[in-house]
Image (tube, rainbow, N blue to C red; front, side, top):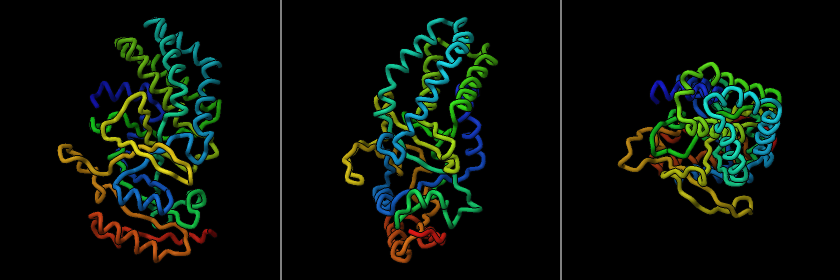
Length: 319
């Protein structure tokens, strides 16, 4: 991004911006907890799946963010926006409301997600996180530990995909974050006022979109989740492949993110061997069989030193 774009990012996305900057600086890995079957398919196909939000584990997730936004908006956020933005153009807030209201049902029914967690290499490197094994193990859980820089690539190849940290907020803390966003606009009004009103509307719409799709109840905070979000009816991505799968007996649309770049794209990090740090086999009765299966699959898919890149968690979780 240009310095101006970075500044606008920090103004309109004050929650996500410092966290993304920290991830880019530390290069801490992200980890995808899933079933062994899904992990085998991800590696075999070199594709990550994005599932519709309504089909995720907690079906109320999207509603929590939406309700927090609605409550904050009716409890002072709207008036604060109007007081700051009406001097630029009284149409900004009106257009924002119309735009968001028009797309709200799409957010709820046509948002697709792939979920990851920040990985504590020092404490979780060979073990994984106990709470995540409890949620995803079911006798055959697997964690794919991934190098994170590609998640924040600015390549046009990923246009339409957005990586954002999840905010774990209740109504009051959510309102505080949103009022902080407006205060950031107010403190940088000289810069913001030079933008076309429609650009301000678009930036605020995206801020509202992520507030809706990437806010969870504070009780889930230990997940330290990041989400790759895709809303194909709002902005499509050339790299994404649409497909149909039956998961847990439920036929559904999925979208697939490639873990390999076409030859004409200069994306060295988008390569399974470079993208995947290692695999953790979760608590299971069959660690040796799973170890051999994943080591052999990695070798077949061109991953170097596959045996050293498969680890078995020895957390004594009763499955």
